[in-house]
Length: 149
Picture 1 (spheres, rainbow, N blue to C red):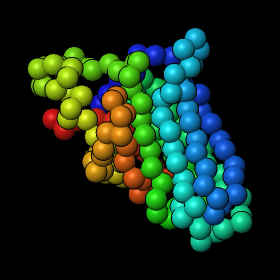
Picture 2: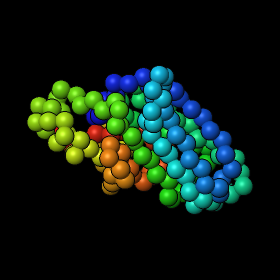
Picture 3: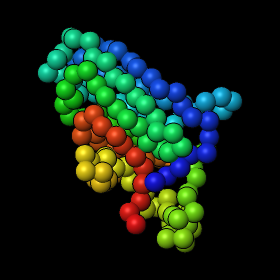
Picture 4: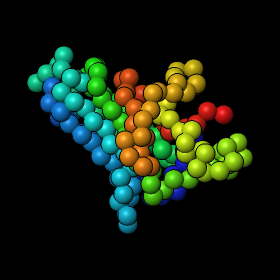
């Protein structure tokens, strides 16, 4: 799993109107306040409940590029998650031993969703920019940046 060496982002809860697009950005703590992750919910994500308030809770995983995500309404399609790790990227020692370098480890990274059995199901992930990793969300849950062993 990709570790973060920076000041941790704070938990957040956001309420907005379902059926309207919304973006949530979490930042590392002071003094830098650089972006940690961005969640985007297009109009289609909560369209079935359009007009109702939806609450989204995001809890960053301590020391990792990961979040626990809960929503008060059932998620539809289209939501995306982008982890941004340009400043506080920290490859664990085990990853360096397996991959041989931080660069090779970074190239193998993907976003995964933790399944109830404790296994990580990797999601199709893209790199919209350098040091950014993006995947479509399948619903609420635990999401982590990791590489296969």
